[in-house]
Image (cartoon, rainbow, N blue to C red; front, side, top):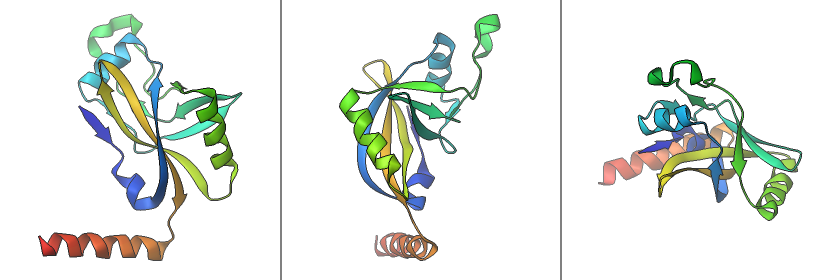
Length: 139
């Protein structure tokens, strides 16, 4: 089970990646195991020396009844202090953004791959499309 943010590699130059855990509720982990989640529109924000993923979508788990969760709530990310400081320094530079790249299961825990990306211009995106088409035609 792996949820990938396909648009991240198209819209950004990814310079470095970090792996983080996510603080989840029980109904959220069950919904993720069913594949009912999306990180396409999500982003990472650092507040009070803590990292949060904002606007990620995890669908409600029908069997959870009254103990269900909100579909689009802020979820805390589990990172070391040094990693959070590095990410904060990157995010404070103009043009850089913290983007979720993938969400996956690792030893029973949900992990999130975070990318430090610099936005592409329109001509860079055209170049990416051209390279992708050339690869497709050569194989």
